[in-house]
Length: 201
Image (cartoon, rainbow, N blue to C red; front, top):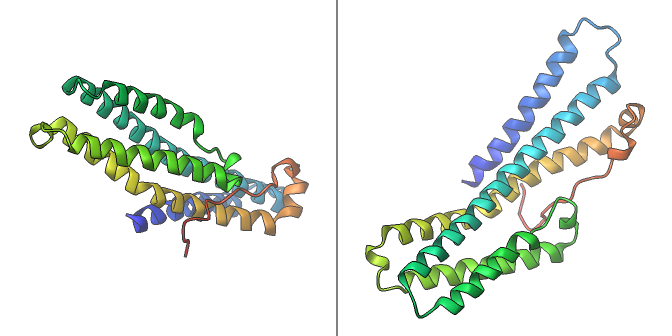
């Protein structure tokens, strides 16, 4: 899975950069400058990062939705744990608000706090679901548990894919500061943060 995500990130980025190169080589406009080419590549990197980020966040949103669905299913089949399930629902509602952004993830504590809250909820909800007497015969519970578990396993793979794109983007900024300034992109020269907890080769 990790190789697939990493390959996807590289191919997305590479495809966009190749298309930009083709524009430069085939264009008939002789006034197309190096700054123009750099700007095109810069915008392609922006698109690639956004796509990688959105895929990751959308998958995390789906995991949270599955956790909500699991809680709903547990509320239907059990009556003696409603108070605890209500507390889990409140914690789950807070989870999205706790989640890092591309800017806030510069603070490692923000990521660690979110990961701790998310991992704790995943572990406890799965354990609670699997402890139900109905679990072996309840295919809905089983599917939700499997969906949550698989999504949780994908987290680091998506982060690695995002980091791969960001590393290339940051290197591109470093090498092309002069041209980006010439193209009036000085306000966009800030490097993006990495998850850094993922080993990127």
